[in-house]
Length: 419
Image (tube, rainbow, N blue to C red; front, side):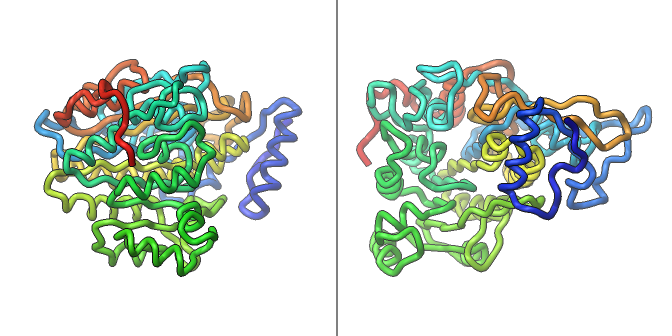
């Protein structure tokens, strides 16, 4: 069954998900109109480039000097087709996303210790610690032994550290970098461990931290008082983030599910983009003369994949790509920063076909509402980025980072320090 303009600008996210489920039951194929997804019509795709005209160039390879800073971008659920469909929507077949212009590309195997198809906790644990673990375990190996993460090692080396996510701060991906729990759903333990980890910056939906400290998922005086006693500044808006010079801060930006381009995470009274938050976070962390490690996660690309909503995935991935551009701009200027973009797994088995040029309709299909076991893309920019070329395992990522920044082989340490 085909349906033009399936994702209307008006109407509810839930209704869209129900319609997607109905279409999937009837064969899964429907038509996505690319043109109306665009926010800026000046980017509208009007066909292929004229013969002889070059596609947008790749960013340059930088000399292999010392690396002081590392920015790891993770788009949860992002596969190659999600990247391609986002490019087609915003820039056309001959355009490029910022992440596609990064000069080094690779492919990453994502299986977990107990399943050929991973999920976010196990996938992030592999990228953080260099160890495979069972699905739904975070920061520990299958025997429940805590393992040191690349973030923890860089923190202990004197560097600033931070994490940004468009979902709960205690969700699987951030948890795997700074907490150690046998089950990802133990969110209050994760919240306590994240606070004890003493990251300089932790931004996302902080409801579990508020619940842990004050007994309510809403902002409450007791939680704010205890955060202050622990030395954390509390912010809940982009304006507050821009004003803050605090050495340690917790940012509470509530989730907002949206059909619009921006894919925002916001506070009660203000909208903030992932790109703006990333830009300001880099400014704050880069004040440490020893360098920094920053992990930035876009979770909506996974949520949209589970719901089989291509427009939602596209819009969230575009917002993620805008944040990647902030990291690239900083790395281009400083010459000492490694930027890596990848995913923990692909979600939905996205495919598309029958998109004649210059028509703006493509037929989109999904294989599942779950994760898939396909390899995911990796893009790298900065000194020593070439080490990320080719096919690798997700456990190779933190090991390569450690070697590039001159750290010890932390994955050979027996267990993580208590935090």
